[in-house]
Amino acid sequence: MSTTIDIPESSKVVVAAPLRPGGWKKGLAIMDFILRLGAIAAALGAAATMGTSDQTLPFFTQFFQFEASYDSFTTFQFFVITMALVGGYLVLSLPFSVVAIIRPHAVGPRLFLIILDTVFLTLATASAASAAAVVYLAHNGDQDTNWLAICNQFGDFCAQTSAAVVSSFVAVVVLVLVIVMSALAIGKP
Image 1 (tube, one colour):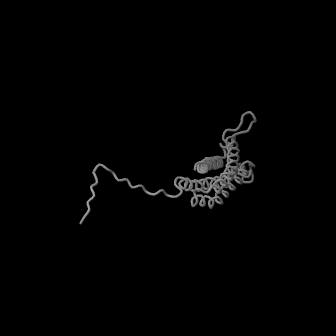
Image 2: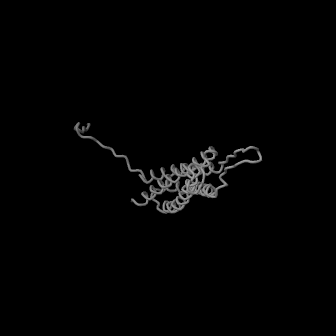
Image 3: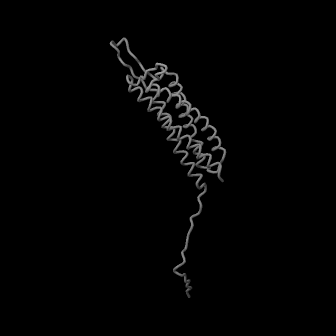
């Protein structure tokens, strides 16, 4: 006694995999974590690069020297402090990002992160823009006010400060992406 079942050749059997809990929100949360790691590297790299920028030029004797250092400019001091704060905040925000991975549908941690991310994005943008203005003046000077370009003499100092400004703008762009992704995750059910 056997039973036969005839299945025509033209029919296709589709087996669907069960939906994973979290879905695309979990993917956004994982991407959020990875982007936060990148922003940490960019922000702390910018602070460290600017904080170590220093160049001394000997002039005639060793007793009469010209020095360019980040602490000679209050804008650069502001830059180092704020980028270090942004990097520290991003390190402290990693556990909340992990909570968003574990519980992708939880709105509370994401909303908390969006608010603080926006505050620190503002700080990072302000410090990067102000440092960019000073670096621009260092490279080009200003003929109207008789400010001379110092990058002809202090090449290493200008290269380090320019690299720090570029790194800070990378951190700003990554923070904008993190905020947009978090807003998308909160906005859609």
